[in-house]
Image 1: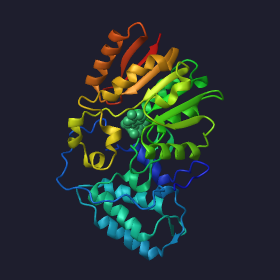
Image 2: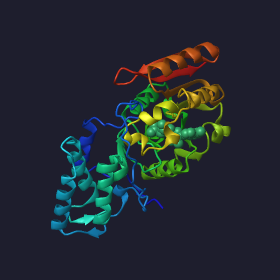
Image 3: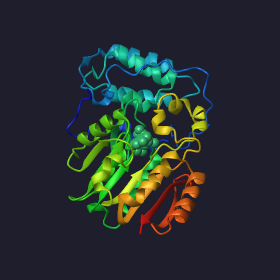
Length: 340
Ligand SMILES: C[S@@+](CC[C@H](N)C(=O)[O-])C[C@H]1O[C@@H](n2cnc3c(N)ncnc32)[C@H](O)[C@@H]1O
């Protein structure tokens, strides 16, 4: 059972610095950057699925024992990975309080740290959150860690005339990051309907919606793409999606943090990565109201160029202003447009 916190947590200062640092886990850019080592991960998912940062600090620890742990943990960091010292500082800041209480027993913290250093389990799964779009998004195994490049969809939504009062869909919501961030931008009549086929994603997305007190604005629905949205079809002001888009053949080349630990369901886009993107395109015109906006994330230039051409040619009478949008690395990461 995930524990719920009524209000968003305050950010401890050390964690704010994470925003300023490059984050190395982008699935979107991860294709074959780091060859996987032949070793397979040995980390089992933790028995308690509550994200570490949301657990109450109930485990007293003598300061000397915590310091001894810090030294042992630091000694595990190879010289080639100085960023892990930073992670260790953040880990300790998240896991302990100034009055010497821990959010998990020390032996569990040891195991979590070992999994990060040895098995390359993403730091976000270790502490249970990612800082994204001005939010602290709870994440856990089985849910994609939201990526910084995806934050650009928030600006695109904000640029749509009258967006505040519209009904929006976030397809493949994962942690619910997009749904929660968009809902926070909406006025009293705006709503977000978010879908995901993964039960874990639905649980975590609902947790994040509750943590931000947005139950009256966001509905998380279990099911495939547009299927759970029958009754809002034709009424949506916008459809947003960051679907799985990595070609199946590229999955073995992903960084171990991604390929070993993040859900295949969130990554695998089929043979050329376009299976889900094309399915979503097919459903757009019946889902959107006239003048409605859509944006989805892609694997990069090749997919975006193909989709702009495909939509503009096949459905020229249904859509206008279809174009690719660059991410902060000047890659055509998004495709957006409007229903006529
Ligand atoms: C790349 S992740 C994006 C997650 C989140 N929107 C984000 O940007 O962090 C893709 C999401 O699509 C979901 N998904 C995969 N197949 C789906 C389907 N048929 N219907 C709905 N969601 C699906 C996955 O479970 C995963 O959460």
